[in-house]
Image (tube, rainbow over the protein chains, first blue to last red):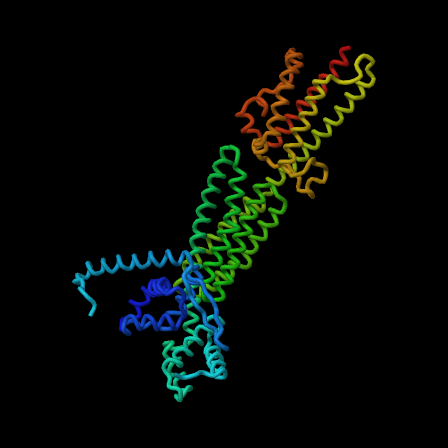
Amino acid sequence: MYSSELIKGTLKTIVLKLLADNKRMYGYELSAKVKDLTSSKIQITEGALYPTLHALEADGLVKTEIEYIGKRVRKYYSLSTTGKKSAKEKVSELADFMNTMRFLLDIQPQVAIA
Amino acid sequence: MYKISEQQIEFILNDISARGVETEDLQYNLLDHVCCIIEQNLEADGDFENFYKLTIARFYKTELREIEEETKLLLTFKNYYVMRKIMLNSGIFAASILSIGLILKFMHWPGASVCIVLGLGAASLIFVPLLFTVRIKEKKENSDKILLAFGSIAGLLGIFHIMFKIQHWPGSMVLGSVAITFLLVLFLPIFIVTGIKNSDTKTNTIVTSIIIIIGCGLWLTLVVSPHTSQHSVIKNTKNYLRNEQLLKNEKRIVSKLVSNDTICSSIEICSDRIIDKCEELKTILIKGETGQESIDENFESKNAMLDDSFVNNYFDNIVSLNTMNELKHLIADYNKVNNNSTSKIPIKLTFLDSVENLNNAKMYNTLSELTQIQMFVLQQEQLKICAK
């Protein structure tokens, strides 16, 4: 599992990218998906996920829909038009950053993920 | 797979609320999240209460409400940066446009008033309120917050005082006095008491207090208590009223003479038009200066006084410029007919003589020059009747 500092800096990008690929998702679904895709290497904590989702909503990058499941309220998040643009920008910025880090830290590119 | 009952949902919601999460939106987010984890991971006959406790404990480091605090922090910081940006930009805009306005005023070029009002308006309505909002978030102590509030109010009142003074709007003296009172009676004592206690801020507090007192002292000398200036303004206005009285008397004499005259039953049309045009111009200037159509004996209570301001501020529109040019033409025509050196209207070095003279012309002198022209024309009429 990676340190929370590393995850914190990339959390917005992860959330935006997942929403870009999955149309609409709710909080638990997002964290479960990340855990599943990364074989539990990245686990998003609730304390980091919800503040980020609220900030993205306030920035107008994500839209929300509410569904009632009995007494429970489920909030689905999906990308707004600006969110879609931002998702692409953030992913390409992170990819560029990773390349720079690879060069900076002299890391040999991996051929395939084990 | 565990099935959560409605009572358990209520229990979780109440627990989340009791743990200090107040935002309803976040409460429902966390509730759904916990329910999902329990449903996915707890056996159908598992111990709900125990599993819930373990699950919710994973959500935080010390307390659950830290999620809400983190959310608020992220949202506040977003607004904070936007506000800071607007604050800085409005401050730069206000300072620049105000400087331009002051240069224009100094050079007696048109547009000075617009720039000054715009600059001071941006400073008072955007910059100071945002500065207050941004800074209050940074202050932790209540005394610091009160100081900031008093300082901002004093600053706003000071700006309004200057704006009202420049624009000759009524109430500028009251605003100035309230600003000074706020600064010296409310702000300064709290500032000194709170600052002097701390050894780190002691020297800075003393130095800043001295600067504030010196600044207020200068301001009081220049703005709030300019007894001499006020005296000269009253004197100018009284002089103007006396001149107007003399003019009225002169008009009555001429109309009496004209009515007794058997050959000519009225004064010459050209003279009459010059007198009317001068009157029109005087009304424009007085309206510009005092905001009122005319000045009477109650000028002090109406705040309709003649300051020693430059008149070219009031010649920045077509109506006043046209009136002035029409008067110039009428005088030129008059002087063509009356080409004797003693019967010509003397306009040398008056505001009508050249653009430079107009740019340097001040209110009281200009009004006097116009009255002199009217008196001159009236006296020429008297001389003509006497000569018959």
